[in-house]
Amino acid sequence: MDSPHMGQLVLLLVVLVITILAFYWLFGSQILLAAEKAHLSQTERWKTFRVSGIPRDWNKDRLRSFLADLDDTVRPVVESLTADIDGRCSIATVTSQDFSKHFQNGQSWKIPLRQLPGSQSARDRYLVLDDAFLGITSLFDPQPEDHKIDIIAISGLGSHAFGSFEERDGDHMWLRDSLPYDLTRDNTTDPIARVMIYGYESSVANSNSFQNLEDLAISFYNSLLALARSPTTRPIIFIAHSLGGLIVKQTLITLSKSKIEDDQKLIKAVYGIVFFGVPHDGMDISSLIPMVEDGPNRFLVESIGHVNSQILSIQQREFYTALGREGDSEIICFYETEKSRTAQKDKNGNWTMQGPRACLVTKSSATHCRAWERGPEHTCAIARTHSDMVKFGPQDHEYQKARERLIGLARRALVAGCGKPSGEIAWQETSIYTY
Image: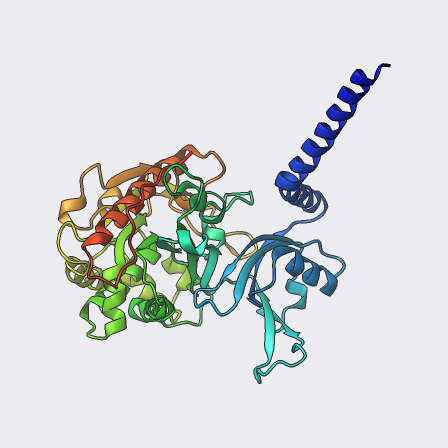
């Protein structure tokens, strides 16, 4: 073979090697992640855990190695790693076989971290694994220079902060895996929204809790205070399902009445709310009453019923102006259009959702919000049951409805920011779109 042909062959080989290396560099982690998930699904059931208290300088690989060294029978996959709401530590979601065998008192696993040589900190440091997801959990944060909006999602009665928004019989969690990448800066793929979820205890059967709606709202309020302490307060959008929406409303009523500077800072930052099946005018609780019996949580369940709920009537009246006048904020209401299975006992005496079907929250109740927002531009049907209306999978046509409404809401939140008092709300004229 003559030298020109040999030179061309060598050049082609070099290009091929560079292409392979570039492909692995760009997509290697995704391929490895898919392989890990495939292995997990073929061996034993896996679930999602939260890891908190992670040092800020750790990356996904270091966290994965640390967890794998703790238990060589599991193969953890770090799905997300973000700064916690107060920025002191990082927090992660991890998919793995069951870590809960290590939980102390069945609640969490506290793992002490060694102090670094020369460290001046007197505080013991722990990594904490749990699967309850109580309080605020950050799922995604953009680059600091791109961070324009905060989104906080809260689930409903008897729900799970993470699992309620996860695909049915799948591992896709749209608040973590889709929404951040659909809210981007114009002409780029740069995400602009930090996405968080909030979890609280609200089990229905065998509950020992006597908390009421106001108690739940106060707990949520306390979790939001870290946002007020932040040097920059960004526009806030709430995503709320079922009872979670009533908690958001009660929290905003509290903020609107407060004279505390941080509270006023928060209420002014709230631009929008997206309600999913929220029983503004009550819901069908007929199948829930036998579950609670005369338990301490019966008052909470009865307070959200659709028959003469004085609590909801008062809340609706007080919420009407909590976010200011028409044009100061925006609310979008989604409602279910499929009947849901209700609760009934099985042959072993356990409660299951296999009872007769019923509409739990009517369209009228789900859209009974502010008078100027009851038209089609602020209401939308989701062709799912009450529980499944926030469980979206990849390329889900029902998710597309929520996505488009959220894109518009986020865009208008940024534009509205220019009307806020200087120094209170971070604002930049940024248009967003989806791919």
